[in-house]
Image (cartoon, rainbow over all chains, first blue to last red; front, top):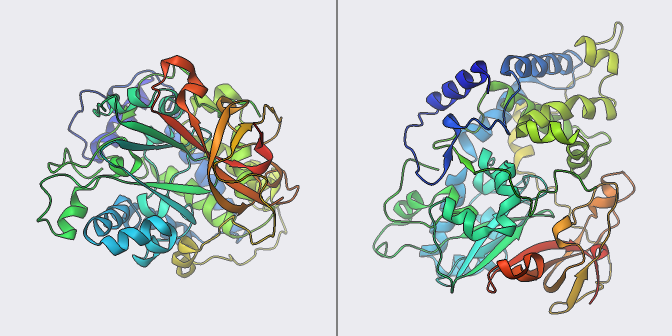
Length: 236
Length: 220
């Protein structure tokens, strides 16, 4: 990795307030293998700026509309949406029934709908069934409930290995499953988008829906982790 | 096409790199190229999601692997702009509109963005098409190697599975990506035992569920 790129990554990570480390997973800031990032960022900045100004000058796009799209995915649509769906399903059996029978409609009840979530399927985890979602061909992901996908989900290591070695992938995320647990991997090859309904953690019986939603992580709704009472790190 | 994008089952790609508290966009340009692509696609023209995916598959393989996700979007955007006729090659190269070209009014304003975001643009179709397979039936994924776009992953070709659900009628990406029509047909969730795909090294309990169109399957 060139020094510019290293500085850029370091800055990006610092800006994101990242501090904690996870022992089992490699980390963006100390990765040197360079599969994912190499182009000089200033070059990419210039190329995108040039295209944007051309399209604005031709009257094809409105800068304020671009700002609105970026703002929507940075501040409004993210894994908190999916967490509310999961928490509602945990506390409301009738909602859970609707969620499993007609996921798209049940998710829309909470106000979440649209691009890359048009035809949803919800996968319920159970003590002996664990679901894991991947898109081996590109990076399909349920945007209305989880927002835009993290880099690891879009990366070659995850896309290549989730189908052939799901238990090894889960181990890398710190999740060791017993041999008698059935692992179901869902490869998102069509326009069906998957949301994992994780198991409600033991000891959460008296928690409010809002408190439960705060426990639910993005990673648990992709199926690479479980929901636990003690949230590790910040919101992921 | 048998490209590097079809990664399922490949080995040697390294560890999964995880970033705590990852931002949605790591740089301004990532958000801008994402928004430009969304807004342009909402503006119509000769484009669809399958064509967009295929454009990424056509990137030179070494470049595809080297690039980050949004770098691929940066590489695709000028191709999309050119193919949809939004701008000419000369305009893209110079970064300025051709002299004398008329300025249009953007179809999508900031006020329209919230509606665009939640709009349901499903590829499900009402077409009356009979399913060729039924739930519970044993099927084999066809051993085909189309040189164009396909969503039949290589690791499943020739393998035996079982239909677990008929998801209804959907646009067929293999034709739609090339603007050869939607060819709507039934889409199924097909379960493949992990051992059928990967042999004895896999757990006998595990399985991979793949969404497969009628044209990807044959009777087993």
